[in-house]
Image (tube, rainbow, N blue to C red; front, top):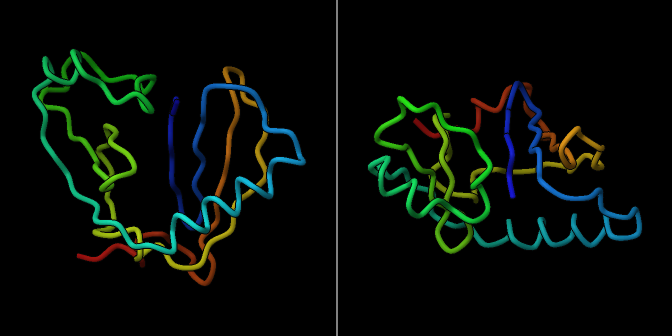
Length: 130
């Protein structure tokens, strides 16, 4: 499950719960991500009442801490893939991500950090559709 996610410039880091994958597993992870990104999926924002989110948080992102004052919860939905709270700027489709590379995972205090780098841009905002 996701503990945190950040994006700055052309790089992003996702902190996940769990153990560091074995180096022999990393190429399989990269291939799975590339395969998933071949099919563009719609991305949308939903506003969910806090009481509903607290009763039914996303399995994957249940570790993302939310301030008690957040209500409604702004939820990013990637059709058929994911649903998580996020207050950031997002694409309208995963097809807008474009070329990128995954950065090998590194241990974090409470899990593992996986990075990605967008190729051919200096700032992720150039890929955001207004």
